[in-house]
View 1 (tube, rainbow, N blue to C red):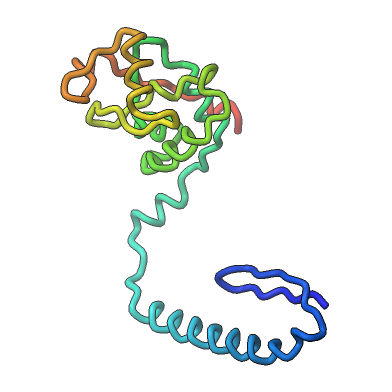
View 2 (view 1 turned 30 degrees about the vertical axis):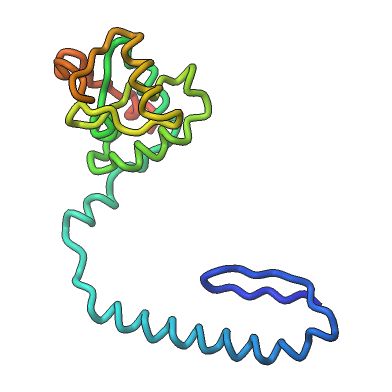
Length: 169
């Protein structure tokens, strides 16, 4: 007999005849968990404030595709940098800086698609799959200088890539 329990975690295991006696005990625990979950859900929903217009506008923005982000990265020349926010704005979703960071972290080919050229809006290095020291090393090799962990003359090195995303629709 195979049993599947779904809730916070999915558990799947084969159950032998001698384990059947534990089934009733497990079912009672699951029922108790479901009851607690429903209670908490109703308490939380009664205490939640309505969403603001800003959140509604955010959800109405254009979804960001990984391939669109990678295409933009290819437009940033060696020795130049852009920011997570610059990419988000270029892709029509100005509040998606964190999503851009997540997508960059999933970059399957960081040699061909230079995600190391994306820095934080204040010019600091920001994250990199191979570590911030490696990111800084790559940027310095391309001619970008740093002072106290921040791109020196940040605005001189910063570019604002433009997306061709309108062509896609």
